[in-house]
Amino acid sequence: MSTLFDQTAAAGLRERIARLTPESKAQWGKMNVGQMLCHVNDGFRMSIGELPVEDKSNVFMRTVVKFLILNVVPMPKSAPAAPELDQMKNGTPPADFERDRENLVATLDRLINLSDSHEWARHPAFGSLTKKQWGVLGYKHVDHHLKQFGV
Image (cartoon, rainbow, N blue to C red; front, top):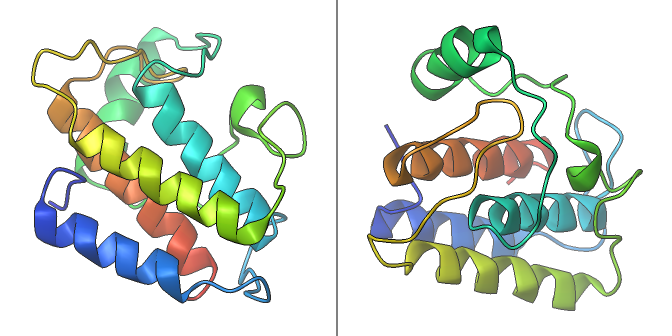
């Protein structure tokens, strides 16, 4: 299973992010490419504890759905985002495409270089996640959105 903490996988994500352009169009969903860059960056910032997000988890989400998303099924196209990660609500609004892309790559690099003792934030739907689980979920999330924009 791919993870953000695999150097080859992370390099592949950086290369795919570099192929995005301001004209990249979504193949599904409502976000434009700038909103997607900020959305994924907000997700990384949430995971490392820089962006507080309200816990909306329940037992079913913390057990069954978490297991399925981490181990079995692809990231669903219709999964709702927490308002703090939704660029049409309270998420970080896009500003400048190149700067937003640079911010995403910089946050990815900070995330993958955190110490093993880093205390990871709780996921708003899945609750506590280990470093390994954040690596898998983070990879699946950014991969999902890069596919959304054809890269």
